[in-house]
Image 1 (tube, helix red, strand yellow):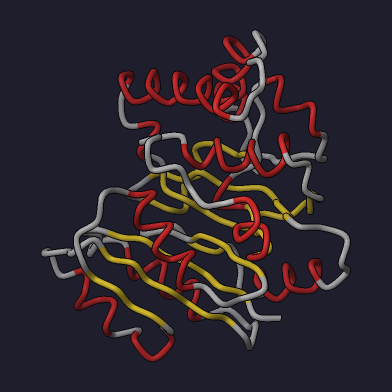
Image 2 (cartoon, rainbow, N blue to C red):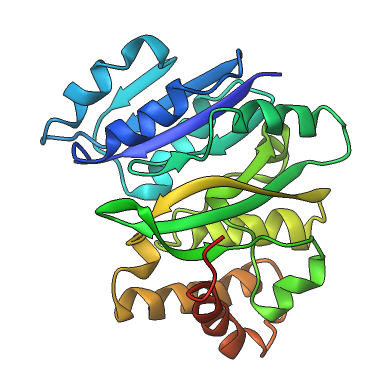
Length: 250
């Protein structure tokens, strides 16, 4: 089974090597690694070129933002299953991709997710939060839940049928996509109790109070964009989930 792994980056010279090593070190023998760079000027491309032999496709050009870059990667992907591992983030363990391919080979799921470790940006050995995906139940979305996007593998034909990331959402298009796929269209989803990814804190939706506020506003929009009435539980449930993650260490 071919697995497409998409990495987006921009001026990430300090951390992109961690990401590329974690992918190059996988024991799965059919990985299509696609790197979408936003036109870096800080040496990121020099690091990428040291791993060029393991990269199937490399694009470096200006883009319209994170989700435009992700969509570029999706349009290039040819694998049966697609996963995202962005600059500075790392696949947890050398056998993760092969394990996920084996899970998809069972044929009972369109998307499979696991757990994620959120680590200190400057010391990846320090786990700051543990994102436990937990057993899947569609109605959990109504209580502010979503699976970790970077810890979710999705069949490529789902993207082809149901669409890519909405670029009019600037910080929560990953939530909208998961909501659209899983809640609205009820694709088959399964959880595996395994840490799939280690990612650095400081993503676009968590950089400041203003970004957190915008992320919550866009979460509300996601429900309306999909013809669903937003659950009032989300107002308090989503912040409480982030607080609870602080007390878990995996």
